[in-house]
Length: 245
Image (tube, rainbow, N blue to C red):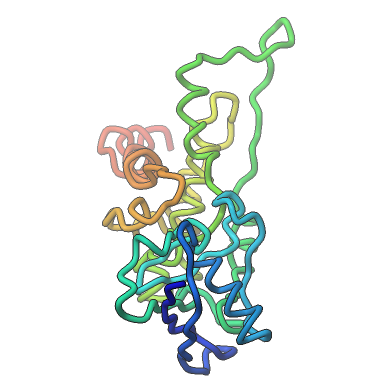
């Protein structure tokens, strides 16, 4: 049976080093399979977060050969196995142990976002929606919160502006609320001030790594930017606000 070598980051709280493990592989294996085999046979204390192994829970996010990916959706036959496969934790979030990172910041951010506020029902007590409006937000609801888009976002990864920018995952979440046909809350002011949408320069790196294929930049971030510009920077609206005041 053929074998492959894996360079896996071992350590905790940002301190540690890579260790190499060679293990047998078989057709159809994904990176998570190899990590589990190493865990079972060579490194029982190796920490790795996973759950469904079907690309739907978002738990097994890591950086494989420098690329943010889901370990359960990265097949070994798609990687160059003539050299060691490097596996390390996401760099945007604090290290806990080995491949496990502390993503609790994301949960705190979600609590800061203005919640869904449904408009009043129609006179007959029902809510009517155009099918096109319903279809528009369905894409955003495919998010599995793997946080790969957060990991690759340079505003968070390189500039560490976690206190000023919510990141692409939560801009998608806000877009799902803002574009919901029944929602009545206004979040453009929050986007401009608290959520830091102006810090995103639409490089589309978040869209590139999304395992669900959500067009984060084109369908969520850019329309939200347009709403902020229309609200706060349109000269006619600014003039109207002056006269209204």
